[in-house]
Image 1 (tube, helix red, strand yellow):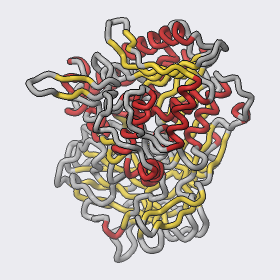
Image 2: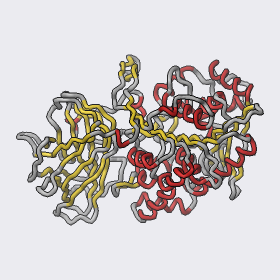
Image 3: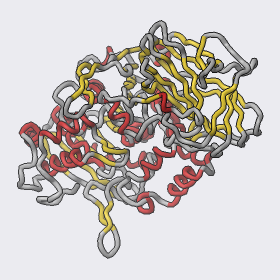
Image 4: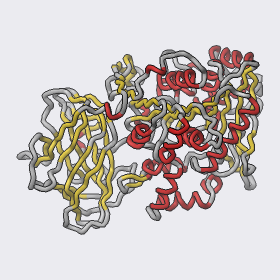
Length: 606
């Protein structure tokens, strides 16, 4: 992407491009955006910037740009930070003497900086907002040139990435200074998606003058440390993907101190320092400041989030005492809102529509229904209705999934059900899940091998397909019992409404001095196909080979309807490609149940 005149890389946007993004999502992998999406953004920017004579947009988008051009002044400034770093920015200033609010949008963690969501900025301008989008320091495409050296794209900011650290907080305040001088706004909101969402919360908590009047944080985090490292397990795949998606080589994108933190994380050393570094960058560490300032805060996340697991967001949200909203959606990171921030939809686009309504009320002064919203709204897996598209053989959603509203997260779970792990039935290698405790049995598997039981096939894109009506299907008969253990209920006599955070208690021993356990809950139909409900890893260290260790941990939260006649399946294995693995390949893991520690699963219901 660039702003250069008649850039041959920018092609005319077609209806097929827009349809593909709307129907399939923004990402083609964890580290790649659909080229059609970047082309839409580039075409919008080129048209607004009048840097091309070629007609690049279909009529509806052309009309949108013309409407904004008629009512606003478009700019592409550089904003100089306190330390001299120059931040790439984009402004849409309404041509009015009437004081209007400004929405400041720090870009997400992609090589395309602020440019990717140009469509959203135009929509905000039509709603009556000034807009100031900027790329956080260090983020953006940096291209090597022949003969040595690099050149930055126009939407790339200088400096190195501070990973939502103090420099990013200070930059946010500098951007507010610029906005106040340039727009003279009536009120100030921050809206961010992914990386930009965390920065938005942190700037609101730290701006010395407390000038942020509302925050929208989409696909966000509350506790970055827990997102990186929880239950003594490192979330390796997510961090590797982020390192590879900055837009340039790590030695140019991160300073020496940050590279050391990342290297330590990847190597599994100095983890106390890594955790402290993550906590400094966690909105949850400053929740008292947010509460004291009363900043209305809108947050969203997904049940099967692979970057910022849902539990830490829920815990952060529950500590907020400000006007607040939590939307939980089917899918994975950025799936609900990503496409809707990039291209038009033919119908409602609730993840974005509700975010904009929040801004309308808290900074736009609109008298809408936001004050009557329930603070927590959960979309229930997988209650949408679908049909199969004969051309693609993929499901298309015909009726959206059910959403449920509660006054707090605590109200999501109204009761719990305890399922005890039991011995294998005669002729079966699988144990059972029953209502009566049972001790004295044991289940063994060989550690260190990946199986068909994994959380996702790929970060982001598996959940993106799930959001679009195509959740991953597992064949439980392909789960290799040599490398995992299974416990299953009989066909359920009544449906179960899983609502909340499951908990698992086991007694574990290993022939090695450490081991990783990954627990999965599956919904299994009568043909042995399954869908995942929730999962979570746990690593046990300092084991004495052959001695028992109690293992108790929470899985990620879920909102899931289990049908009658389906079975609930618990799988425990030692390896998932998302996580670090402390198991010794070929060692034996034994799971058992003792009189003093009966193995059980606590299933939350609502």
